[in-house]
Image 1 (spheres, rainbow, N blue to C red):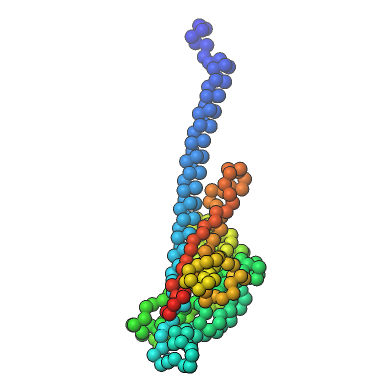
Image 2 (cartoon, helix red, strand yellow; image 1 turned 90 degrees about the vertical axis):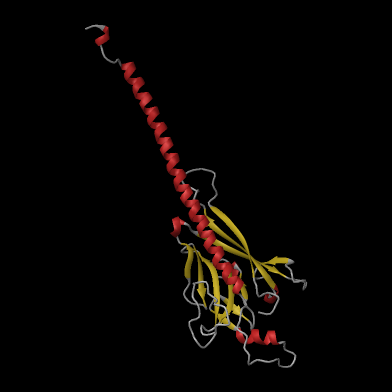
Length: 267
């Protein structure tokens, strides 16, 4: 047999195997990077959508906070201003089961600090009155669950309670102390979860009609002086992998500010 017909030697076979393995590793690396990039992109998109939904919901309710229907049958009684009388009549004193909060007459913002809310973290309460649906002179107000007043003869009020449920890891809302409903989180929308919520309240401490201090709920002494709320939601990080040291934090804080349209004036 001539040398040209001897076939591949052991060295050539080993070189071919090594080159094949290197090529396979390169292809696997590209595939893994592409797959990780696609998963990361979907995760970040889901996170941004969850943030958008949370902001839109809370801002809509906050802008309705303190709204009430003016009653033409009321008049000024003694030294009580008509605006105060109207507000106290429309938004009566009420108490909801813990941890939802307690309202004095006319009060429409209330909060509960995490140390007082049974492990739920901070609780934000915003309430307003919704006009009867036959009243075409008043705007339609919607609560945090997307519900409106279907009663044709009587205005009603909604207390919207926001908090994070540590068991479902979701941002929830309950109306008038009822069963809470999940707004975002709980592993839905691309596996997004909400770990916690903290709220700081912008307070006018000197009567300047502007925020001069941010306080926790337990620090607020007069809720009628609250003008804004700074809300921080801690979402799980879609890029965090527990089994890999990829330098990503486990949670991502998302902070936004809402202003209360009814603060400091007549509704």
